[in-house]
Image (cartoon, rainbow, N blue to C red; front, side, top):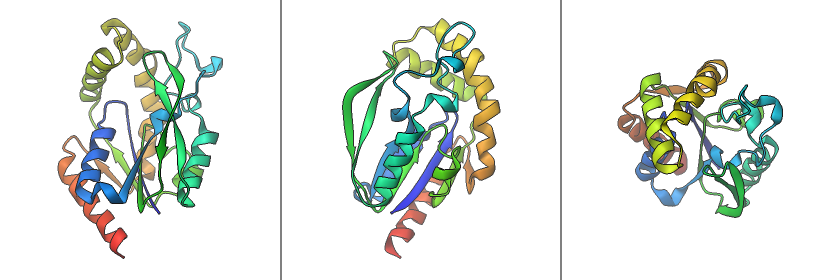
Length: 202
């Protein structure tokens, strides 16, 4: 199994990019794993904001042990039950999603390239570099329309955690990427899909 990591800030278009790659390479040969599924059910108190809100943009908000275990299981050709995280309640549900091993696994999330143990397992590493104003606008629309958030809360969260965490933890991941992608992802997705097809056919 080949592992492809797609990293980038919140609102950079990681899921959209991954779906374009899936379509271009052929869905039947690829599986998709979302890092968002691995948020901890209860984030650590020590990374809460000064106002007592959870910091979803800090590395310690994720269940790294389970994530490493699941990626290793998929790498060994075994299916896993990925958690389901509910962003409206900020908690992990009792449901799971079955993810089967495939020829290629696309792994997308804000910290895809952060952990060295996982990073060393990736065959291709990609970082989506999108201007902050575009990421913020996308995040604003998504959180208000899909996650039941208020405009004020999204703006407050952006300045309190999203922006500083991006600068401290997320953007430095670019150094580990094999290539970076800008705002226009269609061409890059076609190129990556073509490379994946080559890997599968070798």
